[in-house]
Amino acid sequence: MKTIEFFFDVGSPYSYLAYHQLPKIAQARKASILWRPMLLGGVFQATGNASPATVPLKAVYSQVDLERWARHFNVTFNHNPHFPINTLQLMRGAVAMQMRSDEEFHRYLSAIFSAMFEHPRNLGNPEEVAAVLEDAGISPLLFLELIKDDKVKAKLKSDTEEAVARGVFGAPTFFVGSDMFWGQDRLDFVDMALS
Image (cartoon, rainbow, N blue to C red):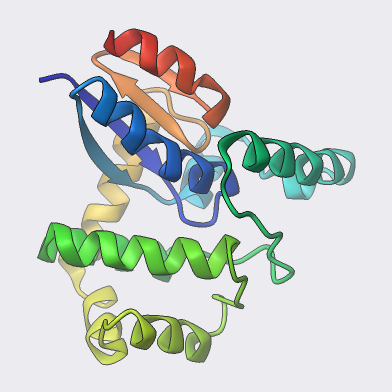
């Protein structure tokens, strides 16, 4: 069975779009997805890249572009007015849930991506995060405990470093074998690589 590695950060709207499309491609190609949470801020720092939100004209264009892609993929997308949000705790949460179980990881991702880009909430506010987790049936107290765990911190750090070492400079990034594809607009190439 072929595998698609999916490096992502929940703060990336393009990762959110890919999150909705990639399972369809994987299913059609009988491939598995290896979910690789990473810290996009750490990737930017290591590579000298920056969020489109920091380049005024690009930020304006990105909003139009994201809406076009959301329509193309038939996915609900709403701009989060609380951007930019530091995703360190949220990405530690993703790593922690993944270390616990597939079920908890996917429930967590679904809740966080939804609160980020479907029904935008201020996920930079710990009380808002707690409310989103509560609604998803995830204990906010457990979340706080898990994101302080040294093993969780170390895994997010090492996975982010691995991403950079392999050439990742932004999110979403996909690997099929040694072939790297960056951006949700490269999903057709991911699909071809699997065929």
